[in-house]
Image (cartoon, rainbow, N blue to C red; front, top):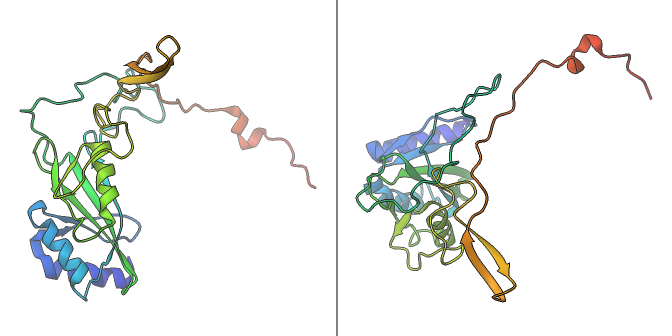
Length: 234
């Protein structure tokens, strides 16, 4: 982390206290996790305060931490079950009474300060609500408009205060949110042209879910340096 980034992190910590906590990371980037109830106020200060001047929202994306940190295979050997996440067909539309893990869904924001030539990443978790909800920042950064629609479409995260929150990548009648980790990799429906009906029709997907078996790393004599022949020049 550069001296400029270290100074930025210290200013943010001093200005917001427990409302914004630093997130350790690699690559020398400054990342803070912001409490959901203070998120809009923190964003407004980051934009308007001359000490920060993050006038540009570069990107916004959703994250599903459903299976974060859990590995199903060993790179030196195959597992018994294979890499099976998203292979089964779960209930895509959850029960209304279901409660999420408070740290399952998050939204990550990438900010740019042109004045100070520095970048900042913010992360806010949606909490246990079903569906997951965070406040929209479209009144702070207009570029959030389509970014928030994309996160809604792919992750099912609602943005309270967005003026036109609807799907932007999938079809209007699409069921579920394809970037959630419990969404089947083959989807739920497929589209084909029906020559008898003379139109495109939707039908249940015909691809059977697969259990993906990881590649097994084996010793191979072809890559033994002692067995390689003389190298040709020219």
